[in-house]
Length: 503
Image (tube, rainbow, N blue to C red; front, side):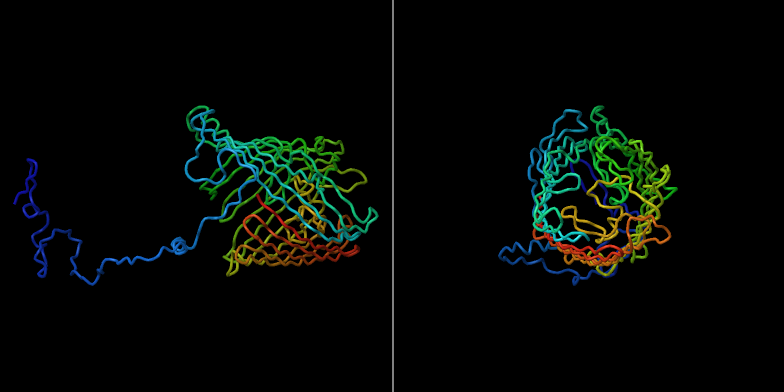
């Protein structure tokens, strides 16, 4: 049999079979089929097929359409206070791109002002006086985006300065009087810096993609390392990073190294500087983040330089490892070591010794919402962070609620210096349906009796609670309370209520 079409012909399978003559149709199937030796013909079963679906016309149900996607729906947006140029929340390709510095690094201008307004009422007893206060704090983040990697950013906090907030004290039983209004308004930026990537800039200028990234920043910039334990400050300086390094031999899946330094605006309890902006302290430092061994390492070194002439410069080193163990424990082990400070005759050192921190949380049957935790610390000497702003709290800030002030009303806390003390906090956090938070905690600070050189005057014990509820996408309600007994000192206590508006 021949099949002809458009002047050419192909032989049929029957005429030119490549299979042995023994392979052929089954006795129940008269049709001859060609197949490989590995294939096995099975009987045809009509019961494996059903009728075509019948679509009954029903009224459209919008709610049922959400269930197709697991009940997910579009999130209500909290829009920025100001947005010019490209909107913050948009779909599709960016609309306004300009070839100013190169086709490979297009300029897409965007200016956004966002932030929050916090207002709190506090009733606090600090061991010497009782103060009832209404305080407010405004955070304005101004972001001028130039390209996908370059921007100018500034933070303004016009209602507070140097850790003091604009407030009204409606109760004050100290000698300063029953009522007092404190005006801390100012127009100075808390941060103002430029950041970008030399690799992206070079790609634009050369009109050819380069094979490296080199992010950098300079100006009055904020730096946070180890969740704010080692560094939590804004200062005049510069930084650059070498990112996404890896090593199969050392089992490093990702590593970056950041070099940074500052020459003014640096605050540290180790060196008393009346005006940090005068450049009384400067430093050079390096930090690294390494993902390895199923966890990650954080390490850093900084050389702190005393420009006041007091001879209090020193070396600051840190090392941390974070990992989950056995599906039941999340642990971070951290150490900060201070050394090399000259001994001033007749004075105790201000940066010496070490601080060991162990942060632990248990993984329960509700791992995202029910989180028991227990955090421990041991401090020897006068351990210090590399740099801390006045409102950032002490080096033990993350140990627990009882070591954390609110950055607004002067909420009382336990001694958070780690100066020749040890202790910790144990508590439980419950997040309900991820829309509320409840935390209850017991905490203690124990004085190391082998030395008399300590800031805490005796052992301290505290019970703290927090409840937080996001009322909607823009408004958050929060309340905190603490009671702490302190050996050789009066107790401290406080309760506060806060409303926060995000924009």
